[in-house]
Image 1 (cartoon, rainbow, N blue to C red):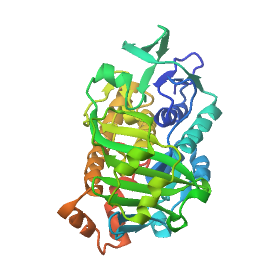
Image 2 (image 1 turned 120 degrees about the vertical axis):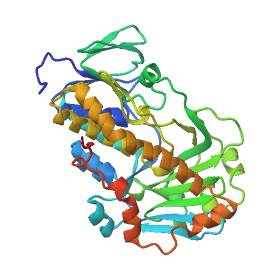
Image 3 (image 1 turned 60 degrees about the vertical axis):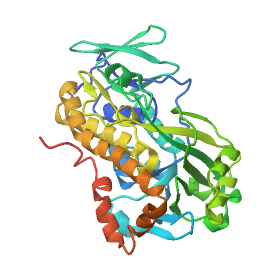
Image 4 (image 1 turned 180 degrees about the vertical axis):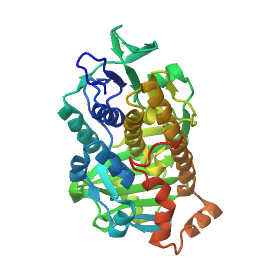
Length: 400
């Protein structure tokens, strides 16, 4: 195992959820790690995210399960309402039977708390160096090492490079160079204090209201002291991928036909962050010698499957397992890691697109959507989720 004090570190581009998860996986294999983060500090923005059992399997494999569990809110069910007539389209219990089936709970959590759990774990190893305000400009490699040049011309040499630099990945741009696919869907996110949140919507559930070309999501955060509010709509204008400040007037203009109970949600936030969303077409190769991609850099997806952060953590665990199997040989491990992840992550990207269509159905398609899960038992829902939530560190590697 690579434990000699003078050994080159593994370089990770990006200090977000994927980068920190990768750092933890690598330190568990005996490596030291250098994280290059372009922001001025290591941190996270955003609001709430949902965590399936697969995310908790990943937290456990990375050694931070207890930290994440202490910060999460455990839901009793997931529920989908029709936003026009309040009809329940589907309800999935996520209590004891769900936990027994998948070995871990369903939860909701603030994105900052996921990041913090991973960051604490990385700092506790004493083997992760963080360089902030450091932007990757180009990458070179030879048979034994990788050299990353930053915006100041500084050279960072490592045994390998993990490109975990998100949806605008510089590493991907150099090695793949493919365009983003801007969806035209805009997401507004906000966090609202419990005292300002409608009592008749204070459910311990991951809740979604689905409407024509739009939907609304809400669920509790931080012990129920806050609520996450997310609204999504098809923009009337040409969108470019990015995050900006949102406006209450714009949000309200897209939800005219929505029932009053759901409409309450868009009146609540005092400030919104506005995301114009995009993904990319799935690719079959994201490993290039001693360089590989991870998380959103490898397989950026829309939010409809609520799996972006979960997939990044799965990637990290799988990478660590591939290194274990190949005795820390990066070239062999990167190949196994890629083969283990391409089809699964592509399924998430493509399923997320289709789920967006189902959520935003109108006309007759809406009627079909509302009939899809009628009368379905909890066990049948769980069977349909097995491919997603049944993932764990023991079954994550492709069989040769």
